[in-house]
Length: 385
Image (cartoon, rainbow, N blue to C red; front, side):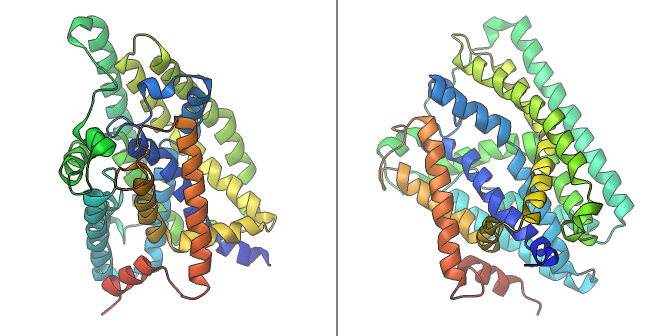
């Protein structure tokens, strides 16, 4: 296999890798606490605490940015620099919102497809702007949301310290969806899931929306110059890896340790937890693009694992939705009924297993068909008329 063909694998292979991180980030909300995920008593013990620390340090916030970067990167394949393809982009965004609405109604209230479709419309004014304009807007949006998050976290910490009597927070407050996930029906889960989606979308946009959109813009600019297809010696991968793991990783570990110790303490501080999350989300891009650099370096060696990951990436829409369906059948009472029955460390192992099986099934599917089933539907909805 030539170096050029290896590099051409990068976008799909990275997308297949990102699907694992997204599932690991999502699965605690499907298996433990619908609104809070891995918090409170679910972090008790060294095994669960270590699993939570690794999840926060290595996964939380990083893979949504990677997926968003690849979303912006792939926009160039659809638009191809032609104004006449704007309609295809609009149809693609509408289709993503449709898939997302089905997803958050019936399976997973933390869906990202609807939000990506919505951001797709916001991306339209930038599709044909200059690289310099995209670079400026990427930095401006990232900076604005960083300031907002830091201010919000500082406000909670100050309020908690000045008026401790007014702040009463209990992590394990029962949510209606939790009760249904323990002993309810598929139909009964729809309304509380929609309620959680409505409540959570604002928080999600505040915590990650700005960073995700900035990653869209960066991906759009990177795709124009085919950044992932450049000769590796021009990409200065060694420097990017050093920055990621000498600066980004220690910051992520610091945030993770603060969050886990706070959750394991006898008196949980919501301000401390939010501060730790903000630290991890604000500095997440350092580690995210360190992963990309490591991945490209790995591709130099011609690993078969890259080809394996690529098949999952080619069917990313199908795999993403399938992950939610399979996981819901594992934990919901209309499936195996394991909700709140499995410790966090085992929940994360289940995530890895589900992802690996679905990627392997993608390989079998693509031996017979050119596209995944939902990718085919997306193609029919968005093809040029």
